[in-house]
Image 1 (cartoon, rainbow, N blue to C red):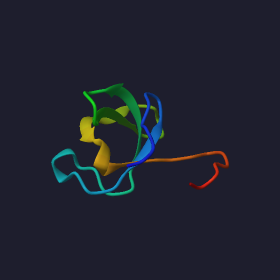
Image 2: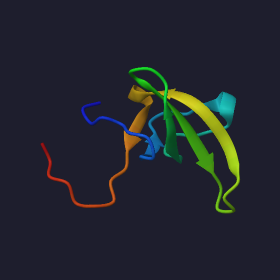
Image 3: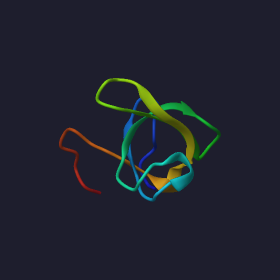
Image 4: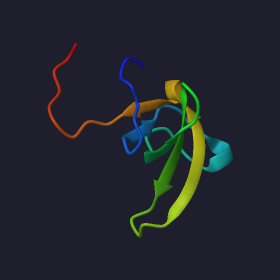
Length: 72
């Protein structure tokens, strides 16, 4: 990916993680950087309770943007 992922970024999964019962497109928050290209991502329900916490490679994540950014 070309964009650097930072702690507290909101990300979406680019593939399923059946072992964690997560599917492509689920949204989580990066809570920690694990090395150069992996991140610990927290997934919460509408009630605020964490239902998954998983280390995920950068290539399996897409940063979500909530404001207008210029395309490269």
